[in-house]
Length: 162
Picture (cartoon, rainbow, N blue to C red):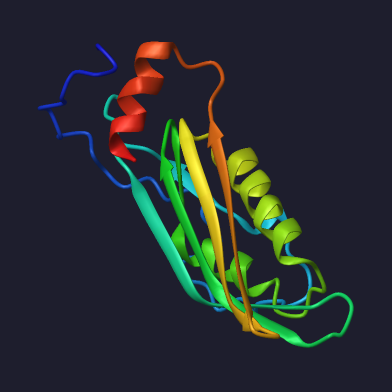
């Protein structure tokens, strides 16, 4: 099948949640150990199509590594999936795992981008940390990723979605 042709046969679209362990479980979250292993994914049912998934976590909290005081903000993830999509409960638990983590905003935004890229191998992704003002200063950090294996034509097509 042409990767970019629209699919018309949806008869095989049975949801495959066979590898998911967090959705529907009563697992207790940890708030001090963010790790890529928390992120779970499922197969993208439309890998032939470019589309954008946007996740927004408006209750993000971490700790300043110098003072131990909380930093609050919103983490916004935009990505064009390739073969995998992130499962939302695992994303929520992953975000919550930063709550008692002492790290600079710039570092954690890059780490989130690295972990999501490792877990999903998206075609394109941006992770933006929009942090509340502390000391009168707002900080926003944006990380961009584009799969370097994509052809130039496909890169241009993805840029139209942004």
